[in-house]
Amino acid sequence: MKRMSIEQLLGINKFAVDDEAHIVLNKDICAACVDKPCTFACPAGLYTEKDGEISFDYAGCLECGTCRAVCPREGAISWQYPRGGFGINFRYG
Image (cartoon, rainbow, N blue to C red; front, top):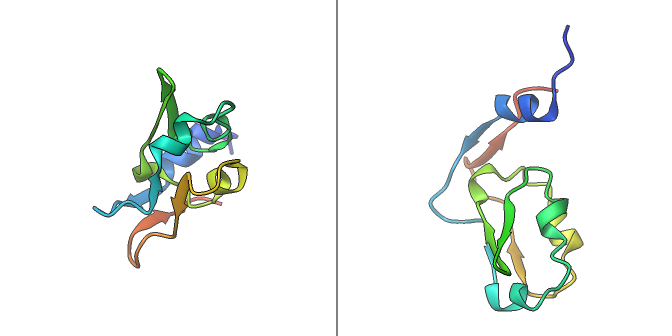
C-alpha cells in the first residue's frame, strides 16, 4: 500500500457542517496577539492572518482543540464540540 500524505488522509474525512460555528473568535483580543500561534499550530490550517486580522473557517475543523491549547490570550477563542450529528467523521486510520 502506498503511503498517503497528510493532505490525502484529511481529504478522505467527511464533515457534517453545522450552521452554528462551534468555534468563535474574539477578533479584538486576537488583534492584540503578537505571535498568533493558532495560524501555525492548527493541523488543518484553518487559521489565517491577513493585515493583522485572524480569520477562521470552522467547516474543516478536526476538533482536536490545539488552537485552544496554544492560544496565549484568555477569551480569544470560544471552543466547544459541535452539536450532535455534526463535525468530522474520520474515515481512515
